[in-house]
Length: 83
Image (cartoon, rainbow, N blue to C red):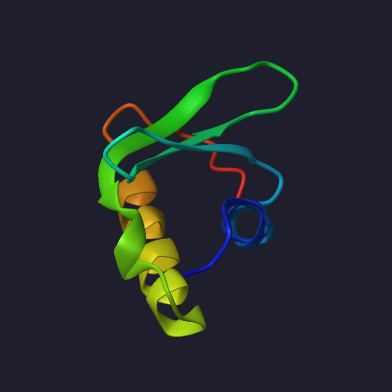
């Protein structure tokens, strides 16, 4: 399984300049929050992700693509995307 710090770094690199918070709950589910570091405006929060499924670079890449899709599909997303 990939470490939480490695996962966070991968997500931040993929969504720069957005910041990322990753947290794991007691049931080992992952919550990812993408937000603007200066304003604190939250663009996406996804929770309930299966941390055990993130054991390879490929599975992390799939997660990043899913997050990217959710971010662009988000109806609350700003009209001036930072990506």
